[in-house]
Amino acid sequence: MLSFLKNSRRLLNQSEKLCLILGNESCDLDSAVSALALAFFYSKIHPQTCNFLPILNIPRKNFPIKTEVLYYLERFNIRDEILVFKDDTTNDFIQKNSVILVDHHVSPYRDSVIEVFDHRPFDKACGLPKSCKTTIEEVGSCATLIGNLIMRSTCLNSEFNLPLQLLYGAIVMDTVNFSPEACRKTEMDSEVAAKIEDFLGITNRVEQRETLFLELIKAREDVSSLTAMQLLYKDLKLVSNSVGSIIVGIPGYPISVQEFLKRTNAKQSIEIFAKENNCSVILLIGMKISNKSMVSRDIGLVNINNDGLFEEILDKIKSHDNPNLHLREIENLNFRGGRFFQQENIKPTRKQILPIVKDILNKI
Image (cartoon, rainbow, N blue to C red; front, side):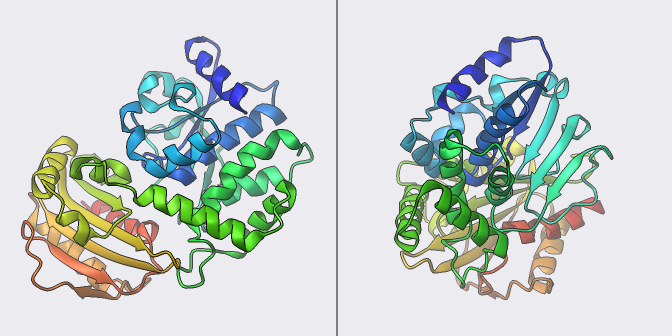
């Protein structure tokens, strides 16, 4: 797989048509390894079809912000110099080639998309071509969908050890180590993880999962070297109305929102971030995981320049009942006029909150 990745960079300079495997713009561990593993797998089972090029959908300069991705890839000697990032390409380059989306299915490149693998709820407004092949299932991790595809292949051999190890880490991470309290795992997540463990010869499954999970959480939460601004970009989603004139920024943190607000220059960073991304409102989503895989979540809503949108999002997240977030307001927290809540129903993640914001924006 390392040779495949090294050779993939050379494809940027070729004129022949490619198939680009594009992860989502947050470039979390799930998105990154799903893109890399799928590209390698397709290059093996469809060698005559075309050349497959995985792309991490962030600027190269932002890669160090993805601390758990950086840690896990370097563990297998996958370093940034053999990877392709979004700013290694151009929009024209992406649009003129075929695209396979992993870990998302709403994309500005939708007209070029030929296939999708995603574990989010289906967005009817995604506008994918009718010919596009879709694998969209609400499992705990997109890596589960890619792992399931690989494990069912008749071409399975030792060449797939590394991509399966990468996917295994993302599944353990995204399911919060299969924690019942987190409610992120599904039957498919458990089945695919077990099949990968069998294939890789992992016998001490409980210990292996726990050790790997704690390593990844430690790497993810090691944000001591990151500034408040870098934290805003660490796991970011930007959502807009149909014409792109109104944007809501939704940064996710590996720490609580309350911890972030205590950071030096937090207020100034939010204001600069909002200006850079033309955000009208910012929805902050924090998650803290203890060593015992216990999860706590909190939310903050900050108005930048749109009172009406701020109030509508506030009303919807408080009253939404499918799922109900069970928000308890945090008193005496004064930060730029925002409203802050402890999310007492820890089951809903950003994937479930995102459609609430999208529905509002789709009506503007």
